[in-house]
Length: 399
Image (cartoon, rainbow, N blue to C red):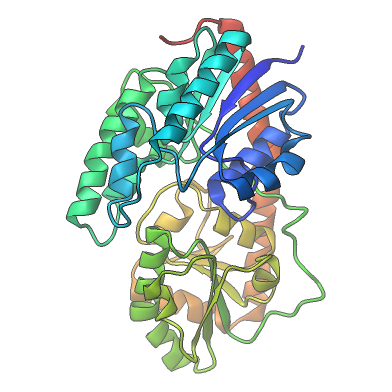
């Protein structure tokens, strides 16, 4: 029998280029046999795009108008403020009140078997719904991400303190919390030992991200993909262009780096040179991955499973990554990826693969096999299906 599930999200999950939205739409579209109701704040443009895309997933869609962003309820608002210290936006408090009012109204008119809240800043809104099994999808631990931020500053330390307070408070009000990687789950358990935290790894659409036999990889083309306003991605490219690329270029003069991703920060734009291309937002990352000789993931901060790594592997691109970039993945160095820690080992790993097309082909095929065997969206959705059923049959929910 279909379950009645209320999903509260930070925005309509419609973008395939934004990690949290990608996870949401891929998983929830595979749970659409249940009666899913979505409540989320949305700008006019998000609303126009969301209704036709989500109509086949959700039986009911409630999008509450917002301006630039909608603040969290409860303790999580501190986290939102800490995250936005650099831009200091104006609080859209009327939108927060409107969203809370809509959620209360829906809760009074309908009974739900499961409440599924996506992302930490929305956790406070979950308190407005009673009598349902309660699931909080955190995806990553904001605390762990802030603690790993590079460079560490007073802002990152403040964010870590506020995030730990918000995550601890939020987990007290949910029956189960999910993350995509074991390291994030472990950090959350340390914050709230009584909380039940489950790891549900990301998936990748291996039918969409597959090798393109019609595209030949470029000569010595290194590709990185990510939202280029995201601090961990900026830190990764800062480290790579400053500490790794000069060594690679010395040994491979034709090597070039292509940084693919939306909203490149001024620091990233300044990296552009004859050896570095900064594309900005692109309609589809797959042609860039298909043309990559290697995919590089030189992450030095951040947490969670990296969609970018899974997508590159799915397209049979050989990957050179730091241990942090493949955290949570059962990757073996020199088998299905090259793992290197430090600038010199990273440059050496790139050189090893650039010098052997056979090794690149073998490693790319092994990476795709790993994705096909362990990281499907169907498997991810099946884990949520089990959690839904368990929560619905347990009934009640946390206070």
